[in-house]
Image (cartoon, rainbow, N blue to C red; front, side, top):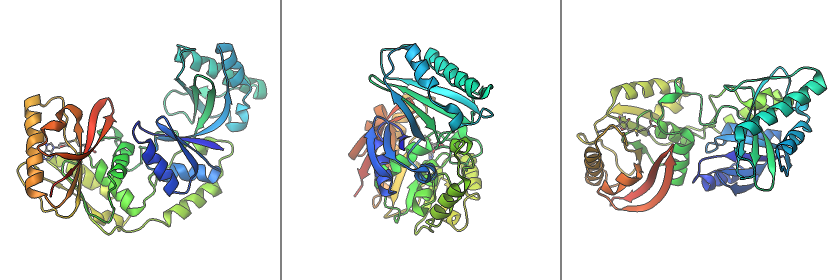
Length: 372
Ligand SMILES: C[S@@+](CC[C@H](N)C(=O)[O-])C[C@H]1O[C@@H](n2cnc3c(N)ncnc32)[C@H](O)[C@@H]1O
């Protein structure tokens, strides 16, 4: 079957490389996505181990659709009752990349009607719609030439790794953080430090990377578990095989932040990670501008505050002082910083590499600095 792994703009090649390195078949780069071929085993495995994908979709049908009536007929002819039970809840998400249609809500409604009508015709009853946390998500991609219908095998976005209780606290998406770690080509045999770690996303993602810990190790739910063809035994096989690859890292991963509350919270999260892996990650309170931390021949990755509440002049000074501290005390390390784009020039260092990155709606740049 054809699958599509969705990701952030700018991470397509990173995702492509990850799919190749984990032996997925025939990956091809698309816009904010990479397609690949998978049997059910590889579809489950992709959900479990692919760290730079937001969700994995399975293609179920494609057709050239010219108008709303066409769309209804196309969706109606799909035997939905063979994919999922009428006891499940579902939602339809539409992406429009053509000017042939202009109202995606209306199209989603039409598609929903077609699914419900097909169920009624086959079984005499229908599944309910749930906009939040449905069991089944159907993605319809309406392009210029063809309309593609996918079943979302992941459900909740795969950045929700499952180790955080209150997810809203992470200001950088885990998939983006992991993509940046991969983009930076960090060698996981080199110690890693995040100088302003906030809720610790870079540090936790680095721990996953260094331990070969499957990115969905803590997740209990995936949408494919609600499909009629869900194969529990095959899923167990994926878990067994992939969990055998977990290894103890050879290095330490450290997160520092000025906010003691975040440090305490991160230290509490560590306890969820299996022993002995959790021994290799530490968080400590530290004001980076006032106190140097002993760290050498390592790798520094961080995203500096871009807090809109801080006055711009203060933020300029903050970026400048951070650059000076790095140059003075951390000379033997490689450094990568995710910075607000228009503020990057105030870091008093010359970048050796730059990648434009969109962090939510904020235009950022991911810069490498060689300090020696
Ligand atoms: C953009 S956030 C980092 C977000 C982080 N990547 C995450 O995953 O949550 C910036 C962090 O810098 C911290 N910070 C601000 N000033 C600092 C300082 N002088 N020393 C250390 N940390 C500082 C803030 O407390 C905040 O958590």
